[in-house]
Amino acid sequence: MPIKVAIKLTVVFITMLVILTACGGKPASLPSPTSASPSPAAMRAKGEQIYQKTAAGIGCQSCHGVDGKGSNLGPTVRGATADGIKRALGSDVMRFISMSEEDIQDVAVYLKYLESQP
Ligand code: HEC
Image (tube, rainbow, N blue to C red; front, side, top):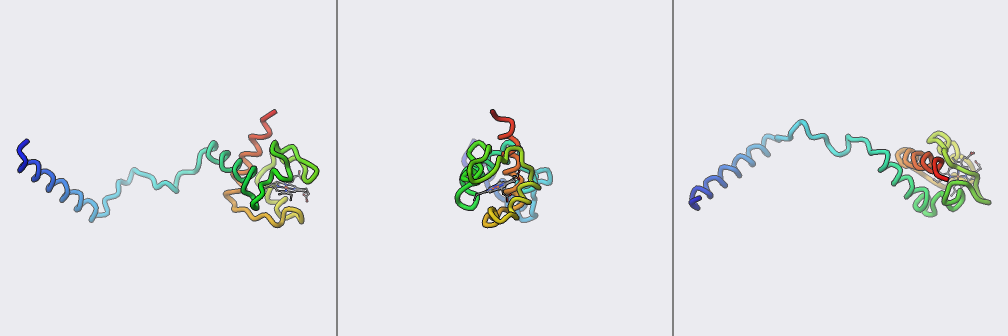
């Protein structure tokens, strides 16, 4: 196509973009990323990270074992629920660990998964 036409088309296109942007033209059909709840797989992956590594900088596994079956330092936690974790976080031994509601949910998903493992 002739270069002048190409330039004109580009100008028209850019003008339309500017107008659309100025109108705050956000397509209503696109959900914002934060509104979607995370998938179970994503929750489990995050829960694993927290359980095995990051909780209070040492991970829950340091007392409850990498497989959640417990150790000399803590009982088995396989299949523990979010409520169970919250209760435990109030105990003297675990009081030093602080977790967000989201962290607790994620770890509960992971502990549920651990329960299904050999
Ligand atoms: C410093 C060691 C330690 C760490 C770290 C620790 N716990 Fe515990 N946890 C214990 C001990 C000891 C108990 C049992 C005594 C009690 O409940 O007071 C317990 C109890 C629990 C219970 C209740 C189990 C039951 O059947 O009564 C759950 C659930 C639990 N812990 C989850 C977790 C999770 C999740 C994490 C990581 C965020 C974690 N713990 C980190 C030591 C630890």
